Image 1 (cartoon, rainbow over the protein chains, first blue to last red):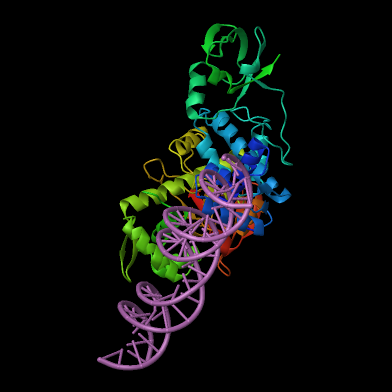
Image 2: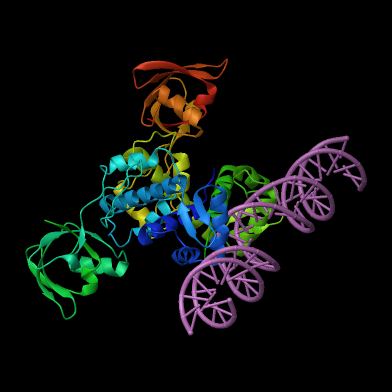
Length: 220
Length: 220
DNA sequence: AATCATTTTTAGATTAGCTTAAAAATTTAT
DNA sequence: ATAAATTTTTAAGCTAATCTAAAAATGATT
């Protein structure tokens, strides 16, 4: 069965929305995620239903079938492996790779992903700290909390971001808060929910509420 | 100006045909190259003409404009660089890479090709011995002849293939006649235009007319 | 339960790219 | 130079994916 580039993107969007919201993806949620009209989504829902890639109940929302979920996770696998390639091998920065990987994830080939995986040394996380599903679709799980959840004097490592925007990633680069950086909470300001943080055991920096709520930390 | 995947493929086909035949590409030649109907080609010719990517005179054939030629050579550059990547880094064999590169060549990004080129060490030829145009579209030229043009006792190196078919490439693998292999003509049989050849200074092999007419040799 | 607001679907159209079949233009052969 | 063969174009229509606008269904409010 042929699955188009566009259909693949819909499946990925549905996967993302159900993950995020913990419930079936509504027509509107999909149209918003895909930046398209609700009418287009209704149309596409019919096509994907016919191909048994999704399960749909009118006005109830969309869930992925086993088949659909497999395609979606495989796309995520490819996307994240290509991001690792672009950063590790071609030396792109982590804020430049999303759009390119968005195209590369649609390349179809039996052997390519597995060889790429091997070539990259079977990475478990992408350059933003997001887990890379294995060939069976299983994601590695890591104990992580938001920096905003850390208490005074708690320490940890930066392991990921919740906000993937270019603006945030570039801010983190400027602050030298890349993946693997050790952090320690020195002080919490209730007034604006900001934190004074020791970065790499070297520099102190006050980080805003918004920053703290978008940075994943592995405690230690 | 947006150029679609399909339009890019037409430009590449027109480039290939004009190169091969040394004259403007006819509607039929394009339809044959693209495995599509002549009517579709006429349709596409209108679109590409409107975008000033080709020059067309009814019943006279198609030539690429500067713009069109630039896009075509850039596609060839990307295709061949990706083939080098697949063979050198991911260890695909030379008969497996064409279809994957056919997809990869359409990836759009400012920096990607140049970084890939650098990563691969600025290769001048792809795994089949075809020249890789530089960023300005210039192809390296190499003095090469077909094996069938060599006389008795002449020697050279295998540097390329004319026939890119899987069958031929796999035959060459079996015969250990990969790129860089030294060959010497020991005997020419007028009867069927076959040749007895010394391969790598080690093994003798009789090669058919068809094989000799599809192997490029650099004399020495 | 009736009304209002929101969400979703349907209806009708558009575009890119494709098809087949027939018509027209060009080239080749007699 | 006229007929025959070939090439190319036109005509008409299909599918996937999209849109806007209107209709219908659902959910929320009083």
